[in-house]
Image 1: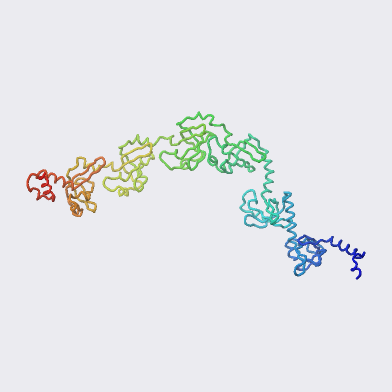
Image 2: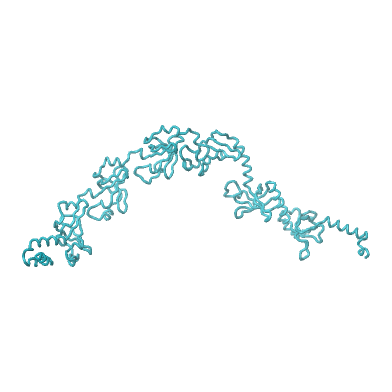
Length: 574
């Protein structure tokens, strides 16, 4: 007991020194990775010996198997574990082999990231936005974005699943413990080395034979050279003529010769030109004359026209409006095909803007001018009804490819025009009279009724105030429908023109079929307009009666005009 009372004696100091030496060798801290030696294995658990711990840590044997450590599950093997707690509520030591593996794996990832070294991994599953990659060495899981799988779009990646391959670490989040990798960078790095070797083969001035059109851009066209290199032909290097978009000149899959005009070994780019393979045609554009016919070759067909070649390198647009004299909405694909040689007239040459305009229709005689010479206004010709709408017919004359316009009002003199229109159909042959030709507007108007006798000619020898006899055809609230005797046309006598007195101006006074006299109130042969009036007839007869019987006292009382005697008295007073 005295040894503990006096701590300054030699024995106490020796014991203190031995104890401190032992503690300095073994430092046990929570959160650190320590090595445990297997000293016992059962069916479910593995018991470890760790120097400095008061009890043996226990591991689940399935945890070790899932980590691929089945071969190490035997007495005497050493396994690194993470010391989570020295003593839990049950007095046991808590350790984890999987967490230790992840921490060690993370340290290796950080080291590879800082040194920009690739790591070996395998794609184990797909997820939203990409895939999950497992680090082969440590089993750490990393994210592979879909855009970083390959340098070109892949519809199917089944051939890449569970295959060991290299990945580049492109992002590490040390706080969250997340890692992002890229397979694309590995592929690109290999291709970059190959691309340098390929580009070194080219020099300015080289001619590339049979490069294939691969794709378009607003600034140029991409060509594939022998399946190993993509080169760009800028928009300005496509043609000496103005080009708005590469698809106006090239089609995907076509093959063309190119001239190398630039080689950039830093950017690994090769620039090429198509137009520099031929001399500038605008240097001798003076050889072409305006309003002269030239043979051109169709090289590209578009919805709005066709691109044609006057000579190699000199391409111009034949707009759809210059295709035909008669067809308004025709497309070039209905008339031509690529490779056709057609006649065109040069309508414009703008050397500063490097633009040439051509017309196909001007190379042909205007069919409207031919029509005007052959069928002047007033000519009666036969045609075929080729189209019809709700108010007109279109009649084709001969083989001139001209559809003359025939309005329904020019079909007949007697019936309603729209009713008459219903009698005609496509394919009917009719004789018509040329009424109007407008060559500048490309319009021809014809009439059918003008080929027949005009029933209005019955009024040629008639005059205003002349009395005629008409037959009442029908009555309605608006007035009477009458037909003059000897005339084929019907006319209306308005209600206000039936009688002088408003009380007698009743259409119901007539039943139809009666023959009555009326006077012509208005007549215009040019406008084919006539007005008939019973009221005017009464006024004319009344005036004649006043002039004839006005001097005799009491005369006129027996006349059928109710107001005649009053008018006679007024005349005597005057």
